[in-house]
Image 1: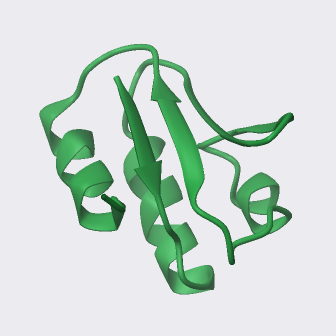
Image 2 (image 1 turned 60 degrees about the vertical axis):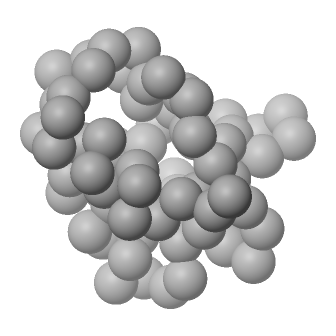
Length: 74
């Protein structure tokens, strides 16, 4: 599953990481060639949050899909 998201600040990053950490599969976030684990708070905070970020999930979880929709940009 792939999505494009926008995280506006540390509170949204914390919420996203908390929900991603509940999944038992790999989730990556990337912008250009910079890739971080979506379960890494510091990794995501080190990214340019003014940009839309691409998310790739290596599995499916209905609760995490809700989180992706919450932060999705169309």
